[in-house]
Each structure stands twice: as C-alpha cells, then as structure tokens.
Amino acid sequence: MTQNIYDTTEFFEGYSQLPRSLAGFEGAPEWPAMQAILPPLTNTRVADLGCGFGWFCRWAGEQRASEILGLDVSENMLARAKEMTSQSNIEYLRADLEELSLQPDSYDIVYSSLTFHYLANLDSLLANVYQALKPGGWLVFSAEHPIFTAPSNPGWISSSQKRTVWPVDQYLVEGQRKTDWFATGVIKQHRTLSTYLNMLITHGFNLKHLNEWKPDSEQIRLQPELAQELERPMFFIAAAQRL
Image (cartoon, rainbow, N blue to C red; front, top):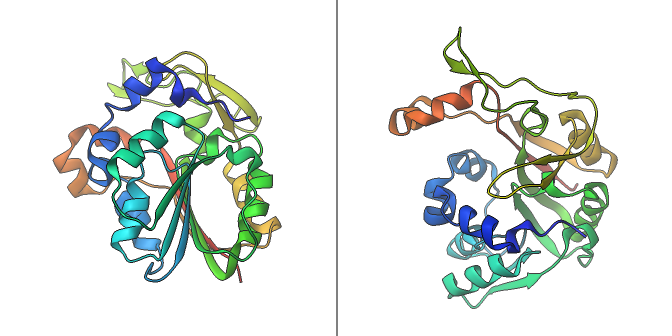
C-alpha cells in the first residue's frame, strides 16, 4: 500500500500551510502550464488521481464537466475536500492508487498533480488508466522531476557562487528514496524521465506534450523566491492520449 504520510498529524499540519493548500491554483505556480494543455472539459467524465483538497475537481466542475471522481489515499485530504465542495456532480472516494481498478472506457480525462512520484507500482496504474480512458481520451499529469527526486543534498549553498546548487545522487539508480519534508522518512519513488516516458509508450499512449517546468519572468517578478527554480526543474508536466 502507498505510504499514507498525509494522515499523520505532523505532515498534514505542515502541508496544510503551503501556498497551494491555502490558495489552490493561485498558490501553484505550475498550474498555468497544466491548464494550457488540458482539453475542453464540457460534458466530460473526469477522474483526479491524488485529488488532495479537491481543487482540480472543483475547477473541472466550473468548466462544466458532467461527472468528476476524486480519489486519494488520505482520509484527511478527502475530509477537507468534501468540506470545501458543494457541486453535486463531484464524488470523492478513498483509494490506494497502487491497487486502482477503474472501469474500461469510462473517462474522457484522467488528471493527476504531483502524485505519481509517490507510487512504486506506477506501471500497473498507467496500464489501468489507459484502458479506463475512452478512445481519444487524455491523461494529463505532473510529477516531481527526477532531478528533484535524486538530490544528494538539496538546498546546499555554494559559498563561491552564492547560489543554491542541486547535486544529484545516482540519478540512473531507480527506486525508493527517503526525504524529510514536514516529517521524517517521507518515501518517494525515483525513476528517470526516460522511464516515465517509456511507460506511457509501452502502454499505448501517444505522448502529446512534455514540459520541464520553469517559472516565467512575470512569476519571478511577483515571487522572487521562484528564481531558484531556474537552477533545475522541480516538476515535469506531460499530456498523453489514448488513440
């Protein structure tokens, strides 16, 4: 089963104070890049894998999606999502994405934000997502960039360069990595970018878009701390289609 770190008090309290937790998409600098590659949602069936507080589910409802399913392993996240949601066409369910079984040919769009890097059994999930999409359906997702999931000492400051540098540790060695983020021992799954893409190709997806995200100049002007994101990609964003 996927590590359910979000239901530990220490982690959930820390995560709840992040800008993206408090302000939704306004606090998620990569959202404009994801929104730009999403197909029209009117009259579509949508599944959000790792829905968290339900920000995308509610946005999909505003875009007139007909049915929206939000799935998450965390009871804390789902409880908050339900508190914040009033649309009747949104359903939230607890599910371990490692063992997910969506009905075939059921969804027009499957969306996931910053969840796949937690999953050891991603290959099986992508196989299920492919068959769950209708022909022509879309998978749009973001994940932590592999350079970010393999740091040897993230945040190390170079005294000579006066800037943050991001050395990596055995980038080509895939598998479980542990980090301390709001709590000790948070488990992430490191895999190379080529592994992510080859998984999609192997399961029949047609890759339509890949973005190794970086903030634009206007975002940096408004939030100068985002300038450090120019040192290495923190996220990547992808869109793939079932033909």
